[in-house]
Length: 621
Image (tube, rainbow, N blue to C red; front, side, top):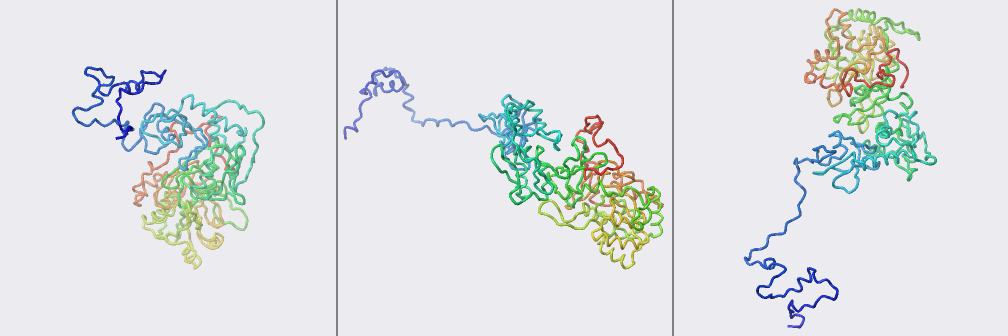
């Protein structure tokens, strides 16, 4: 055994250096003898150094883990003193909305990826030393969130000051005024004068991005919503962020333009007045417009929309959220279809064909109905019926019932708009909103549907001498068909818009557009959808179902319908799909807050949209 292996007794340990404290734990342990005499008192009890029973010591306690979830499968936390239970992965903005707390934001959108670059949604969290972005931070069990503390309010004020540093002061001419989150948040979270010394950074005020969108780069806050939308939803990356710092701008890539069929969705989601519709720009103030929940008639998809109107003019369509059909989006083609509601309308009844270029004299609607009833009475059982899938379910139920019961028709020729080209997202090739509804109604009434080409052949062959048309949209060449219709002995047409075909009608009856009455469509997947009336019918127009009721009574029949609701509830029993549809409960809410006067009131005290119901004006086109 070597000298190094020899153990020295503890009592022979070297004394601590001079000046070192002798009452430290190390000094006490080192000074204790290895074999203390009997009765000697030790600093540490012997039980701590020995186990006379021979049992193993208990295992050391593990650190406590997170508490079990209060509601298994969900996350329970507290926001502004209120408990909320949400699904895992829910962010703070959505959770706070559930308990009535409003966390402001610019860049966040529930259907887009998270950018967290505006920093407006910063809040206090119990498990974070600093403020965290509410859009990017999911909730965890037991977390406590505070959204109204002085620290949070100062953050919101500072962000608003930063965003407004170079923002132009042109709210008075901005189309976004009244719908601008920058305006709203300034009044709520900042409301202080600018401290900027010197001029603002100047950028392009009218940057045309494409055929339908113009950009004011000075107003842009670089929230990147538009860039993310184009990348992620239509998957057409036509926009990007260029530059650095205060000179950073949204723009198209060199040599390209924003020409997507979904470009106007970027205008909808822009939180400020940077991206603007070239069609709606400088047309109307948002606070003068009223919105009616409706359905787009641009194709068979049936996107849910708001029809924004003032008096009896429609100014624009905006998408209305529907998870099953269009989520939060709509195509640019569908947005442009509102223009047919304002111009080229059939507003008065006419009897007699147009001769040359002279205008036909207008007659009272009652006189025209009597003339139509007289003409159709003479061709019962011989009249062909043309039905347009642009008409609503209520219109088709009433008119086809009239055609079968009163005119003796057994076959219905299908008209409608011609087919178009479908795209990769929402737009379908069928440009008619209610083809599925026409098929269901014809089947329920026991009528046979025949293609439009068969009608053309029958007219050319002289087999058809009388025609009753519910809508004058045709899938073929309108001019050619109008020439054939000019040879008919009887041509009674119910039309919404003027066309070469309406000029050849022996009796022309003005029909209402879908925004002028309550009704429903069946979209391409078989979903029945309700739409609301926006404003009264223009001129002498009546809905197709009302005109059919008048003709029925004029020809000695019985039709007691006084509303589209009664038409659906009485005649819809013949269609199995309609029998299961609750017409009342399926209607979208007409206004956000029900009441005696639920419409928001404008500056002069009168509700917007109801200022006048005079002759239609050519505005918002």
